[in-house]
Image (cartoon, rainbow over all chains, first blue to last red; front, side, top):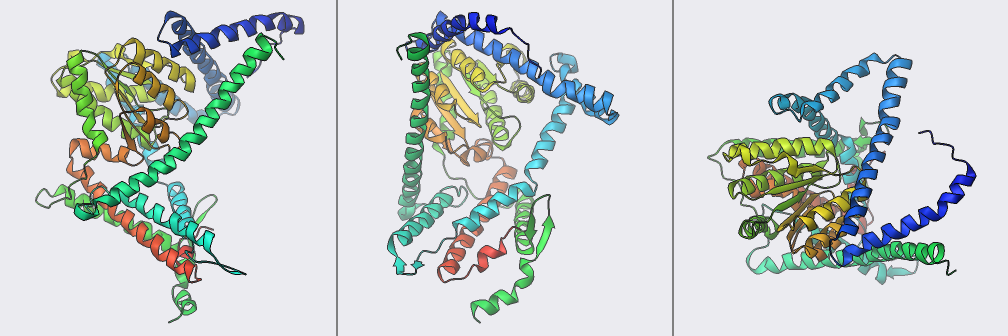
Length: 223
Length: 277
């Protein structure tokens, strides 16, 4: 996408405006922590609107323009007119009596994606994961048996098997006296989710720090 | 028969078979997938014969709660907000659309307003057709409101902020989040919690599931999303497919167990059968 060349002087004079706008929008979004309010609503609508506009422009520049101008007109790939026509049928969607026409490209799209999901690309990660799960439960090293690695592998294998068997929906293996196994599998998953939650919160805190850094350094110029 | 002679006996199974752009698959793996396909076909035949019994599905609390949440929305006179995820057509989106069709039937039956939030226009179009068909099926075609099917933004956080605003402004009684969710999962769940909505989420992203488990009333974990359509509709064909998948999982568990034992005793035989080149 080609950018617009803005003179350096104008960019510099607009910089304070950009900072103040950033501060206002930051506080506007944070105001949601109290409750939904008009200030947040303005920021939300501005963001949703500008994001949609940006999406429209980038789709035109990166997909439609090279697709039509480069591929069809310049390179002479005229067969690409067929999928374009198929895609255009989607615009019948808003018309109640002609809506059925829009179902043809949709059916093609859904079918294509379902078929694509069944290719070898799906099988590959499955096979790789199964192979990587096969770990020795007794780990031998040059100095004998490594107890820590062995326990690690035993736990890993057990946790994988428990978790996999949790997702057996049509086999009533966890009934009666074995129902506790379902709880064990759930606890194992919750421990994993807890670790994931901690990592995720750390990432979110770093985003907050980034915003505070912007407020303190660029707006308040405290450092 | 020692391990080496065993390996020599099955040597042809290690040879490469199918080739793709960057990978080849061994004959053993090809046969394994062929067997899986045969299992699915067998259960398809079983499912089409109504006289033959199919296994009963295990209870899933999150799916039972869908009716409860719609009932709550009916009592409160407030809408149900449905979010089918952040991805275009993919396996989780298909799972979400299956749940959506059930939710749409229930909202049509009980005259509850259903609001859909969409990131991709193609998903919006399919969902709109699906919901409309459900309303027609329930004999209430005029109750379907096109304006409530809302395309928000193609941008991830633009979409998320739009969803947050809708859930809050419409004071949703129930907030359903199914499909593929990413970093915005917690934002959406927090917005629903703040609005006092009963929240049910189901998605396959392991990184986001912890947030949904923490912030939602019910959370379907990973594959439970794909079970939803069979569980909710009790459709024989879908239940049959599920039974076939469960047998496949048991075979994979057996493979992992035997592979682990072989590796422990110094042989990579089982792992090598599943090798990629």
